[in-house]
Amino acid sequence: MVTFFNGLFALAMEEIRVSPDYNWFRSTVPLKRIIVDDDDSKVWSLYDAGPKSVRCPIIFLPPVSGTAEVFFQQILALTGWGYRVISLQYPVYWDILEFCDGFRKLLDHLQLDKVHIFGASLGGFLAQKFAECTYKSPRVHSLILCNSFSDTSIFNQTWTANSFWLMPAFILKKIVLGNFAKGPLDPKMAHAIDFMVDRLESLNQSELASRLTLNCQNSYVEPHKIKDVAVTIMDVFDQSALSHEAKEEMYKLYPNARRAHLKTGGNFPYLCRSAEVNLYIQIHLRQFHSTRYAAINPAMVSAAELEVRRASVCPGQDGNEDL
View (cartoon, helix red, strand yellow):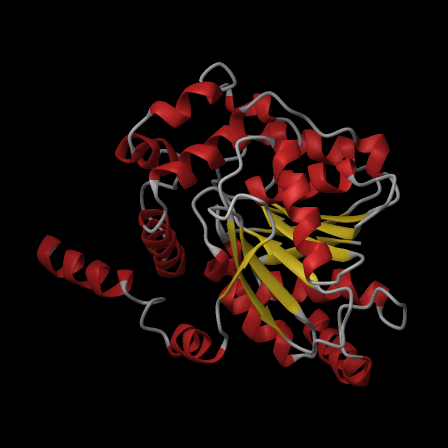
């Protein structure tokens, strides 16, 4: 029985990498590499899909363990509905301000004045800090914060943040894997974790060390600087790396934010609960339709809104949004 179960699990572990959707994504959406810093070793990797006429796209920022392709299901779905989507993998930055400066230069290079940002975990924290750093000349029109946080002290690692650059890659990977869900999981969540482990393995020592440094060095969000940014907080009710206290702090920080709750999804709902996540992204973005900050091709608005209304009637058992 154990052998049979292990055989099924091994088969399941390949599910995302061999899925038709993933293979279609890899074959149709090119990966671009862009250098915007004086240091040529700092290379931004990105997927830019959808109508280039859209000047305020939605940008996806991954967690510590992620790369630009972890959002492939959002790229496929949203571009199919007429949205412009950019998924990023940031280069090695050891400081929040350095990251923000590089991100600003990237937006300048792409000729994007303002953007919407979906940030997962560390990606969400960096999105908030970027909105904060550019508040005098705003570059962020809205935020979707998925399983994210506002204060790095929640990880109790600020005292080791300056030591990550010394640690070998296998130790860094062990630290990251310690936050992944353990125990019995439904197949989709197991697929998602395996896919993220595969993405983690693709990161080198300096990439991992710099991300963990950004994740843990002493820093927090100053909400009064981004009070005019529309925010949706997306989180899960089951096991994730975020504590209940960290989630409550986010609610307090953004009392007027929309809330998109998923009953299950773990650390990576955009992979294992993609239909619900994509629906909530649409709900968030449609408030900007017919404005200069629309992330969608105007010709697609009517069709997209009809789709949202149909889906909203029955969003699925795993999702529940407070609006």
